[in-house]
Length: 381
Ligand code: KG4
Image (cartoon, rainbow, N blue to C red; front, side, top):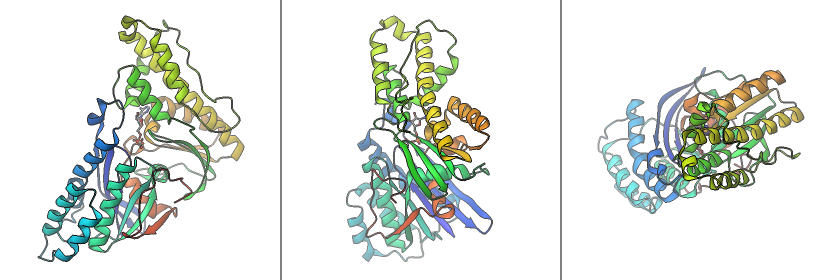
């Protein structure tokens, strides 16, 4: 069985083709087109620009993926002109994509794909629509089944890509990305309960917004992390709050931290702000504040629910300090820890294609009914 994965929930356009085999799975193609450079000038993802980029990139990446998977075959003249009208309707809000797809369908025949697995939420709605509409168009034209996948479930499944994860259930999952910060209790793959969530900004968003205040560009997490690792001095005595760290619940709030950084930055002279030392010390303190809160809440959740392992996922899971601290925590609690390979911590389509292979938390849909839900909950698919 060959599965096409489609991911467009934020600023990465991902297409993957995965083959389910009796002994597991094989990745036949895996492409991600990043928009980092485009958004760096804005200090964050600009939804309408991101949508435009997804529209421009999704078909070329799809074509590359089919070529890589040796599934791209020239048509023998079976182009179905009658269906094109309906296709235009399905892609009426993505006309550029429709034009590209029409040319593609004239040229190539139906590939050997058995299932389309697409992210339907959560994410930026205009972006989600591009992936979902593309999936609907292919599903309709080639009569291929389609399944709806939750983006954060994908981040958990990412732990199974190119490694055998040390996961035992019940597990506590920390999913930290640009749009989400959740602690999830996983009874097994596909059975989740959200026990902690952010009340405002996500951890990645906090990294990105504070990086912007320091003039570091987007995405900020990586840049803050790099500067933080260089910090040696303590000349500025920066002390940021650790929001909600002592609260009994497992929720987070990072917008106050961003405001505290803003006030701290405002106290400084231009010369101080421009100094490398200030940027490094501030980055270290931002990283410490965010990771300390995350770790404290994960520890409490793991103890309360008797977790047998910890799982990480999402772009912020690439943070080396957070990885190190999660490792320390797992050793201290004597439970397993699974962290995705760096490449698969960020958004990608392999994790989306793998959800119907490894989990049961997905729903079949049809091109007639399927639509995105930008606020979808992990247990609400
Ligand atoms: O999961 P992801 O690729 O996209 C979504 O948000 O869905 O996560 C992107 C987020 C950004 O906020 C970025 O700043 C953050 O992950 N990030 C990091 C690091 N690398 C990426 N945050 C902290 N440290 C890093 N090394």
